[in-house]
Image (cartoon, rainbow, N blue to C red):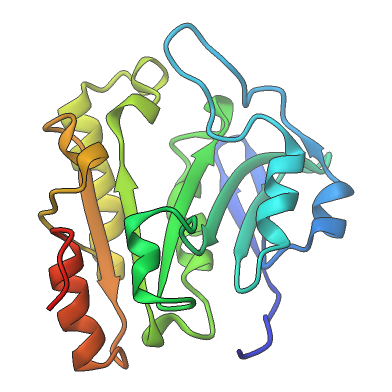
Length: 211
């Protein structure tokens, strides 16, 4: 696999500048403070509430953990791109074929500044992005509807608008967790160099079958 290439960017928001860092290592993440705004609210729990969870993801082969850091080196946003868990349907295509956008989250007090789009862009600056299928699964029970003020359908449309400019398309699937609620969605970006065979197997896998 091509060696990871570190990326850094300064992004201006209404609350001040943020430093965005891609391909963060566990050692780098350990040097930062995890914002306490990632936590448990009345009807929402952050996907990752401990810095150690990000360290574990960053240690996985091929993973890309992107952080948004404020002036005090607090982590106020993060994105995680990593391979699917071994027991998930999407792992059946083999190692390195599919990678999941496992999380994009911005602290409540830093939202509405375009940070999520920047996190996604840097996650996708992966040396193998055209050779694999990158996907996201949107489960409505993980969305911060209270903090955003959106309904589930509005939040769904927000996610589609976020991912579509990067080449993601919505796909129908019978994956049980996706089918639990009508607002849930599955989107994927198929790299230009993904073989015809893998594309065909992916279409069958969407419905739990093999060609």
